[in-house]
Image (cartoon, rainbow, N blue to C red; front, side, top):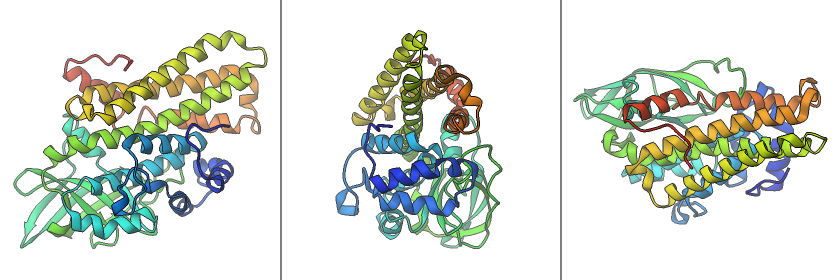
Length: 362
């Protein structure tokens, strides 16, 4: 299957072989991150002066989409890790960035985006689940993060939004080996099982000022939200592209009646992808997050429609274990897109609260 954004051949070959195992958990979760790092994917969009490859946020989206065409589990881990890197790139704490970034770019340690709670908090959908109290020159954290991806057993740093001692929220980086950090066993997911997705409990965890990513979350999170959500949308783009390509290939076997629906889905996919690229390029989503929410909704819906068209085009072979393996995986992957935080229901609720329509982005 031809990808929109080429990937290195060794990674392409490995993802094709490992996709089923990454979904079911048969592939060890620890194997994935080093494979993505070896292809230098985490350097895309990061400044060359900091060890990156240069490029734009749209380039990151395309890379995540390309990986997600092969495996949404791999795209999911890519998103979580690259989002954490982006937090450091947009943090005023240069010392923290310089300390953590080399190991993150090389995949020696995992970065986990624990800011789903923060993004829901900004939209008025949820209270912060981690709080801090003063302890001399430092802070003590308590709380939980019930669902975080890329909590790699070999080591991770997680970003957490925290209600400060004065009630003002900030964002901190918490290391896996800090006393009081407890990682649950991997969550019992129905798909995407090799993504090191687990819950975290923070019990009297000590951190210093040098571990604060942003001291004012209310000011900083809206600025980083376009990358957080935009990179995430790359998963929908990749899955939609792959399912539409599979559907077109199968539709050649006498199912020409689907042509109009396939063309419509492709037009919607391209229009929403173009709108995402434009909004990221001109920084429009900082002032107009509703536009980004609508694009997220639109592309998740296109991906689900595309997988449905793949089923119709392929027919009964989708229910055979061998020929239907790839489709069955994509069907499960598509079921995840509406519920990944922020879920489509949460985004629609946020739009309704703003009096904004949740219609198509383009």
